[in-house]
Image (cartoon, rainbow, N blue to C red; front, side, top):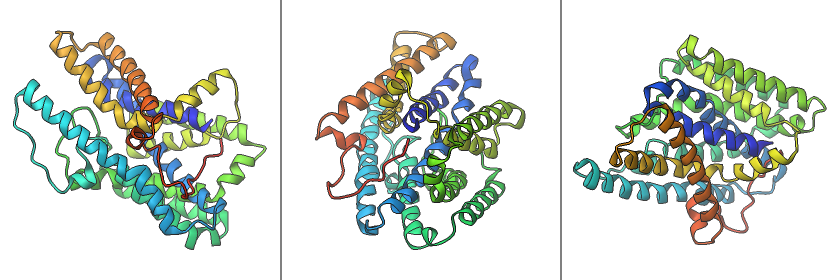
Length: 337
């Protein structure tokens, strides 16, 4: 079920970035804000749980695996988006090229790439904390303490709303810092949940927990407009998605969605390329960005991002681009779904 929720979250990212392109669909954008907290929490959960299941894995080996899985694709896509941006400026908007700065190594060249260095730092930090501290402590207190720390960070950072949208610019270290601070609560929650993840997966109450998670997520998203989509509601919705991923349901539909969900990482990386390219085509063809065209844009972006991720992942040389290749001797944490 985890891969199913990954695919839904990947589509949520597309909705978050594409829906604001038209006034009539802008209200849909915040519905995708659960996705980044969900991806953050699950990445940390799997790092902690992976350390628990493979205690012999050395910290250095894990860092190398994360480097190849996350940071190398980040660098590749940073270069690709620089090329795309310069082509856009030269042939479409007739602007001067943006100068290259060192901050690109942390922020990237597109507004969604900051998340990869953040997850790189978060997962190897979580693995270190699990290996040398968390797994030596009782599980329930760890969950309680980490949840409280995450809640405290939400209170401290609540004035900083998650504002990533299709119009974001000003990619600099401040951009990274604000978004990293906003995602720290999800990372701390992941530290706590990772300590009890195997128990949750084996719990006879697993189905009830999944339904409870779905109810929490839907309620948090429904309350969003009333509370200006505040940060704590976004994290609550992400937590609900994490709990829903515990669901034990297996049927033909979930099998198909889970297959697509394995490409969620590639979808995240590629979707900005596709929606920008499609939006430029709409402009050249004088197609107005209204609710109908934006819905088509979202669907087309999802299909093209999924297909490109699947195709790139099939070949050893291009698999690097979507993070499907790592040194063979490195143990990658696997998800229990």
